[in-house]
Image (cartoon, rainbow, N blue to C red; front, top):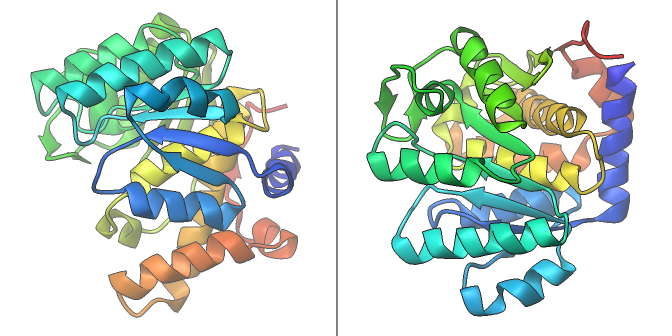
Length: 269
């Protein structure tokens, strides 16, 4: 059963403590790093081109996040992508704000063309990258994830990747179609800067221990959503929610996991 495979991956992540190299946006670096530490992984947050070779030699996954783009960062991402592909490292792309500007959309599409194992995005970003009309509110989604499923499937087939799409319901979509739908998570998560970006770093961490990109994506989103459910019960507001969320990530045990998991796994063997 998929729930058992996901729990197995959570245990494996804690045991192996993979090193995840993120070239990410300045707004979320600290929170993303803390999320990785909370689940037992190790973060590197660096983008200087001069050290990419050395750092990727010791990393187990690469996450590219275009949240605060500038030309030096774009250059670093392209170089890191090339180096990671040479070493067969899994690559996760988070196309933050795709559709909000031509630079974001074009950069995301360029990176998506080669070697991206998982595209981790919200519905508006998925629609924009698929060339469909989508409104954005800054970097936030204004579209329902269910309404972007066809666009997600198009991207999966076009770029031979797995699409991990977040929303009120999280979906993992492969070239074959919808892999699973996950129903955990709370609306308060949208009030914390970096939650979506943290989901992307978690996907990278799970890809370091799970070769199947769809199952790695499902594992990351399940863990994120369950931690959000637990934190919402304990938090007094968005500030304490962020702290409770990190605690829930680190303290999740087997009994609590199976009590909370809500996954439609009809398509999973």
